[in-house]
View 1 (cartoon, rainbow, N blue to C red):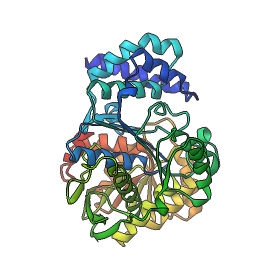
View 2: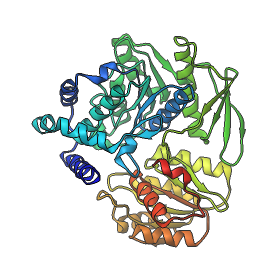
View 3: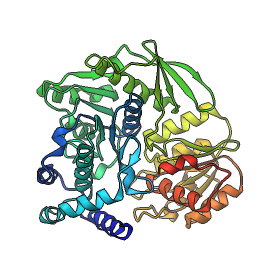
View 4: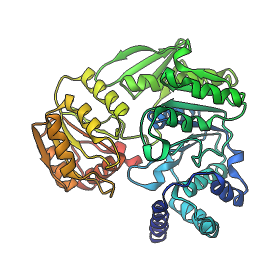
Length: 432
């Protein structure tokens, strides 16, 4: 099965070369061939530029604490494709992927289905076959034409809007907001998260046309009160309900506030949601790579942040918790704003390690060097081989932040696991 699985996965990833094709008709065609499993799912649908992965995992974690059977569909993965599709934190079995891909193969070839379309259909079928009580579905990139946008959710959530994936979603906030707003459904409530007030009219117009109730986080009265925060740990309280959570930082205050309000809204229709005085959000869903602290004294932190908004929150959180400088290991994709990213990160360091991940979309190291020099970095170390780079920076035994892309963090995890850095403590990586 391992050989066959690798063959199928390689074939599946080969379909990424076809790019992204607008439209939902191919996804619906494949679903129909499987008797439309998506119609049997109870779902919550989440879109947004940043925060959607965190919010998805927060919701899945909470429903797991309630004893529900929870399907979670997220992207991208860090190490293994199976991470994208989980039930109660457990990855989809490889043999299921093989069986379903082969079952769909003729249909896939007939319509030249894309990587994400196929993955989405397999996820929905897996959740239906396993009779999940609730499914948390994260969009892949956009909203309106995203393959996940075939479900009829209980509620839709849009976490934030900022510039990213300009080549697919548009190069203005208004265009991106319009695409994300595409997940709003007829007669289905939508909650907006950290959205610029100047963009709210876009969501309001679409919600009005679809008779969808719209709730805005900045107008809701349910506010999180911070109980304590020390060394990257936080508890929060809302409406006399205490949230015990492993996440921290201002960006996660926003994410927690959003999810708390989603739960409060849903509780109006489902009274057994708040059954404990302390609401646990253990993030036991395979969630990783967002301000993940591998060790302290000195710190070793991994973060998948790759755009202005995500990195600004990252830097702010680190500076609030420690005044120490960090060595930074960075690589970005050529189609990202690396100038903007490195400018934000500079506040943490004057020592920058530039390297490459295994992804062919890496920015050229020479280009990153030139950007860093223009920004005033005085100590730039370029080590193209990532494994050598990681070994070099860890030998310094200094505070280290590894950041820039999902691809980079995924490769770093593989290196850390293969090298068995026991001093770091990698037990939590076993879910990856």
